[in-house]
Image 1: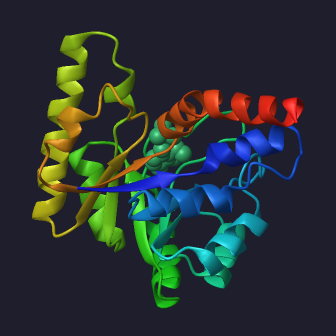
Image 2 (image 1 turned 30 degrees about the horizontal axis):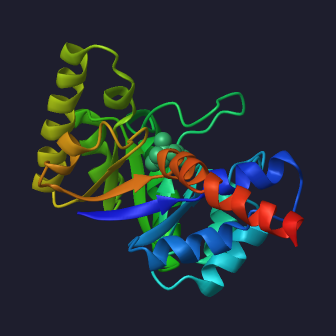
Length: 237
Ligand code: PXP
């Protein structure tokens, strides 16, 4: 199973101060060096973290694959066709949300999504949909012509009680098997961390995980001693 690293929250830290660092491109290169199979970033309509400049730099420099998460809007389609990421992941987006709130509602948008996805594919971009673990939604993903799906693990990750978590895990397993049976490549992500990951890794049909927040949060903690030591060394000098 491969790991793609989402670097949005490196940009969140930078944007909190409207500063020049931390540089998402540098984080992406280090993630690649550490073994990530790809870099994921979400260009939001409100540009709260990743900027178009980051996308251009990532496209030019990273050596693995670039997966651009975006809402299915005309603006984002034009940007994607210009930048040409390896994969576009279509996600629902609402301005008030702290993070993506669930999978895309595909069934009711089938008519609109077919030409939207067709245009991206003609530009040479593989297309994925972030989808809840529901067979009906996954069947609709197949119908609208995507190459792969990313199953939303958010509800599984958030479940407070063991019984509830087991229910969501079973849904993810069923959904992954169903998506594979339709010939789709299956990825998964959202809310995965160092504590809830293992049962997801055991699902054979899932070939790639997309993880962001937990890795950036852990990096801040494991990096703090060194960052303080470096500052103290400067003070002492
Ligand atoms: N997959 C999708 C579609 C997402 O929107 C996100 C969050 O940007 C992730 C995966 C990664 O989630 P997390 O940051 O919780 O690891």
